Image (cartoon, rainbow, N blue to C red; front, top):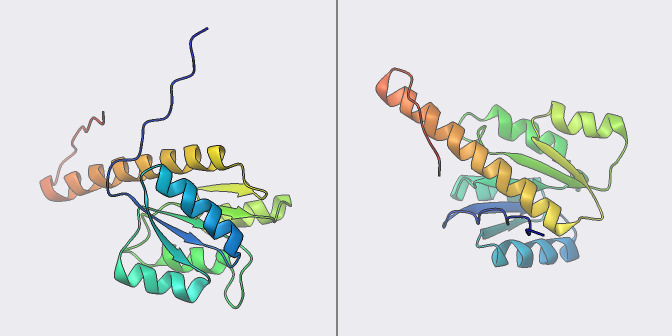
Length: 156
Protein backbone atom coordinates (compact mmCIF):
# COMPACT_ATOMS: atom_id res chain seq x y z
CA UNK A 1 0.00 0.00 0.00
CA UNK A 2 1.36 3.42 -0.96
CA UNK A 3 1.23 5.95 1.87
CA UNK A 4 -0.70 9.15 1.31
CA UNK A 5 1.62 11.99 0.31
CA UNK A 6 2.15 14.54 3.04
CA UNK A 7 1.03 18.10 2.29
CA UNK A 8 3.89 20.31 1.22
CA UNK A 9 5.38 22.32 4.06
CA UNK A 10 4.62 26.03 4.22
CA UNK A 11 7.17 28.21 2.49
CA UNK A 12 9.67 29.75 4.87
CA UNK A 13 8.54 32.97 6.43
CA UNK A 14 4.79 32.33 6.44
CA UNK A 15 3.19 34.17 9.34
CA UNK A 16 -0.06 33.05 10.98
CA UNK A 17 -2.06 35.13 13.44
CA UNK A 18 -3.98 33.07 16.00
CA UNK A 19 -6.79 35.00 17.69
CA UNK A 20 -8.42 33.32 20.68
CA UNK A 21 -9.10 34.25 24.29
CA UNK A 22 -8.47 30.68 25.50
CA UNK A 23 -4.85 30.20 26.61
CA UNK A 24 -4.92 26.42 26.14
CA UNK A 25 -6.10 26.75 22.54
CA UNK A 26 -3.43 29.37 21.82
CA UNK A 27 -0.70 27.18 23.30
CA UNK A 28 -1.82 24.08 21.38
CA UNK A 29 -2.07 25.93 18.06
CA UNK A 30 1.18 27.83 18.52
CA UNK A 31 3.07 24.61 19.21
CA UNK A 32 1.55 22.83 16.20
CA UNK A 33 2.10 25.78 13.85
CA UNK A 34 5.69 26.25 14.97
CA UNK A 35 6.39 22.57 14.30
CA UNK A 36 5.05 23.10 10.76
CA UNK A 37 7.49 25.96 10.19
CA UNK A 38 5.15 28.92 10.58
CA UNK A 39 5.96 32.09 12.45
CA UNK A 40 3.09 32.62 14.89
CA UNK A 41 1.59 35.85 16.14
CA UNK A 42 -0.94 35.73 18.97
CA UNK A 43 -3.84 37.96 19.94
CA UNK A 44 -6.28 37.44 22.80
CA UNK A 45 -9.02 39.67 21.36
CA UNK A 46 -9.97 41.76 18.33
CA UNK A 47 -8.13 44.87 19.52
CA UNK A 48 -4.87 42.95 19.86
CA UNK A 49 -5.46 41.34 16.45
CA UNK A 50 -5.82 44.76 14.82
CA UNK A 51 -2.63 45.89 16.56
CA UNK A 52 -0.81 42.86 15.10
CA UNK A 53 -2.11 43.73 11.62
CA UNK A 54 -0.75 47.27 12.03
CA UNK A 55 2.70 45.80 12.73
CA UNK A 56 2.81 42.96 10.18
CA UNK A 57 0.17 41.61 7.82
CA UNK A 58 0.00 37.83 8.34
CA UNK A 59 -0.39 35.23 5.62
CA UNK A 60 -3.40 33.69 7.37
CA UNK A 61 -5.60 34.04 10.46
CA UNK A 62 -7.05 31.38 12.72
CA UNK A 63 -9.93 33.21 14.43
CA UNK A 64 -12.25 32.30 17.27
CA UNK A 65 -15.77 33.63 16.81
CA UNK A 66 -16.56 34.09 20.50
CA UNK A 67 -14.39 36.70 22.18
CA UNK A 68 -14.93 39.57 24.61
CA UNK A 69 -15.98 42.98 23.27
CA UNK A 70 -15.76 42.48 19.48
CA UNK A 71 -16.58 38.96 18.26
CA UNK A 72 -14.68 37.19 15.50
CA UNK A 73 -17.39 37.81 12.90
CA UNK A 74 -17.15 41.59 13.39
CA UNK A 75 -13.34 41.42 13.32
CA UNK A 76 -13.42 39.43 10.08
CA UNK A 77 -15.75 42.02 8.49
CA UNK A 78 -13.34 44.78 9.53
CA UNK A 79 -10.34 42.92 8.09
CA UNK A 80 -12.11 42.29 4.81
CA UNK A 81 -13.21 45.95 4.61
CA UNK A 82 -9.59 47.11 4.85
CA UNK A 83 -8.05 46.91 1.35
CA UNK A 84 -4.50 46.24 2.57
CA UNK A 85 -5.74 43.27 4.63
CA UNK A 86 -8.63 41.90 2.59
CA UNK A 87 -6.49 39.26 0.83
CA UNK A 88 -5.59 37.47 4.08
CA UNK A 89 -7.51 34.19 4.47
CA UNK A 90 -9.47 33.92 7.72
CA UNK A 91 -10.30 30.46 9.06
CA UNK A 92 -12.81 30.36 11.88
CA UNK A 93 -12.19 27.90 14.70
CA UNK A 94 -15.01 27.97 17.19
CA UNK A 95 -17.41 25.98 19.30
CA UNK A 96 -20.35 27.55 17.44
CA UNK A 97 -21.70 24.75 15.28
CA UNK A 98 -25.20 25.79 14.22
CA UNK A 99 -25.76 26.16 10.49
CA UNK A 100 -26.67 29.87 10.75
CA UNK A 101 -23.42 30.51 12.68
CA UNK A 102 -21.36 28.70 10.07
CA UNK A 103 -23.11 30.67 7.32
CA UNK A 104 -22.36 33.88 9.21
CA UNK A 105 -18.67 32.92 9.27
CA UNK A 106 -18.57 32.61 5.50
CA UNK A 107 -20.81 35.65 4.93
CA UNK A 108 -18.45 37.95 6.83
CA UNK A 109 -15.47 36.84 4.72
CA UNK A 110 -14.12 33.65 6.26
CA UNK A 111 -12.68 31.08 3.86
CA UNK A 112 -13.18 28.10 6.15
CA UNK A 113 -14.81 27.09 9.41
CA UNK A 114 -13.75 24.35 11.81
CA UNK A 115 -15.65 23.44 14.96
CA UNK A 116 -13.96 22.90 18.31
CA UNK A 117 -12.67 20.64 19.66
CA UNK A 118 -10.03 21.16 16.99
CA UNK A 119 -8.46 18.30 15.08
CA UNK A 120 -5.02 19.82 14.64
CA UNK A 121 -3.93 17.84 11.54
CA UNK A 122 -7.13 18.91 9.78
CA UNK A 123 -6.66 22.56 10.78
CA UNK A 124 -3.06 22.50 9.53
CA UNK A 125 -3.99 21.03 6.14
CA UNK A 126 -6.86 23.46 5.68
CA UNK A 127 -4.67 26.40 6.68
CA UNK A 128 -1.82 25.40 4.37
CA UNK A 129 -4.24 25.08 1.46
CA UNK A 130 -5.82 28.49 2.03
CA UNK A 131 -2.48 30.23 2.59
CA UNK A 132 -1.07 28.67 -0.59
CA UNK A 133 -4.15 29.63 -2.63
CA UNK A 134 -4.19 33.19 -1.28
CA UNK A 135 -0.49 33.56 -2.08
CA UNK A 136 -0.95 32.33 -5.66
CA UNK A 137 -3.95 34.61 -6.15
CA UNK A 138 -2.07 37.60 -4.80
CA UNK A 139 0.93 36.91 -7.04
CA UNK A 140 -1.34 36.68 -10.06
CA UNK A 141 -3.14 39.91 -9.13
CA UNK A 142 0.17 41.73 -8.61
CA UNK A 143 1.50 40.46 -11.94
CA UNK A 144 -1.58 41.78 -13.73
CA UNK A 145 -1.31 45.10 -11.89
CA UNK A 146 2.35 45.51 -12.83
CA UNK A 147 2.11 44.36 -16.43
CA UNK A 148 -1.36 45.65 -17.20
CA UNK A 149 -2.19 42.38 -18.90
CA UNK A 150 -2.97 38.80 -18.02
CA UNK A 151 -0.11 36.55 -16.98
CA UNK A 152 -0.01 32.81 -16.50
CA UNK A 153 1.66 31.82 -13.24
CA UNK A 154 2.77 28.34 -12.29
CA UNK A 155 3.37 27.33 -8.73
CA UNK A 156 5.58 24.38 -7.89
